Image (tube, rainbow, N blue to C red; front, side, top):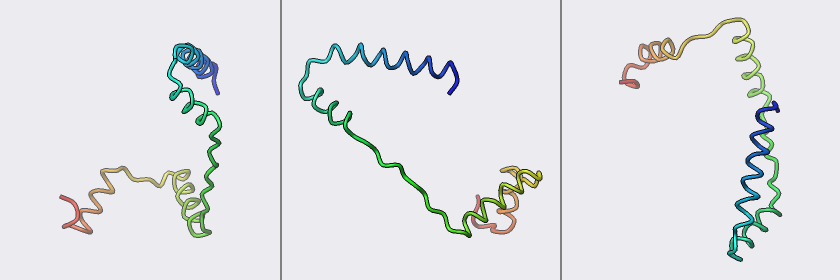
Length: 86
C-alpha cells in the first residue's frame, strides 16, 4: 500500500471514530458490535485445468502482442453472426 492510500485510510478511521462517538442509539451500537464480530470467509475460486490453461494461453497472447481491439472483435463477430449484433 502506498503512503497516500495509508494516509487516506487513517483519515477515514478518524472520521469513523468521530462519527461513532456521536451515536446514542443502542440498536445501532448493537448492530455495529455484530459487524465487529463478523469474520468473512475468504472465497477461493477453484479453476479446472482447462480453465487455467485457457487463462495461461490468453496471458501468453497478451505478452506476445496478439491482441485485438474491441472494435475489431465486434466487426468480426458481426460478420460471422450477422443477426446477433445490431
